[in-house]
Length: 313
Image (cartoon, rainbow, N blue to C red; front, side, top):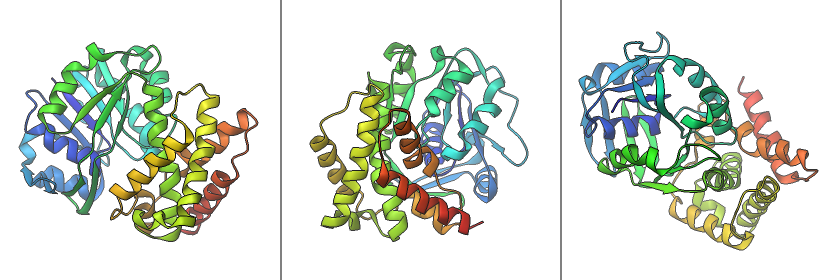
């Protein structure tokens, strides 16, 4: 099985390191910057939940600054896009020559619209819905802190491929101890992750706090109301979701489980990078407008995060 991971930041590098120890085919890892250069020279080191060092000869590394490796064109069986949301479309465009007729595509990036974009480019018969809840960050280039074990969820999106087409990849990820799970309703899968992200990320980023601080009563009420606005939009799109009470209970559990984490949006702001707000809260606002739904809290958070992005320019 040949696998390509495009946009290998923290999550992509974690998956790459684990697959490199269990896969029996070629593994293409496409990264950028100093992190990509260190991977190309020295491989990947995992610490935290597991200690693992993978040498660079266990994978084919290409650098964004140089160009995507072309030696596996037409030979990739599974394409995993793990970039930041803002880079997804660019990664899609780069990967067009990698696939063959039966290749399958998963996008693990945060936010709304990525599956639809993949379907538009690759065709519905190739695209799974997917999300990931493993926690990972980079203390320095080439080193990944596996901060918390989660799952990789793979699902059927509309008329896309089903469980039979995913079994080979699920077996590989299971062998890698990455906890894959199949979800029949891929649209609900994507929205469930998005609702958590819109409730946590912008608020924690604006305050500059760990996730656990959001359990304070007034802050948690704000997080919950942001989530409910998003859930109202999702239901207008025909997404099957639990009750608001169940969603809020799940939000509490996630915040509690990740209480010591600094969310990715806060890390982006600290490093002066663009955030993923337009694929999260701003996407909620825009989709709500289609149905005449007011989403004032998501709108306010979007504007505040956008103002920080502009001040970093």
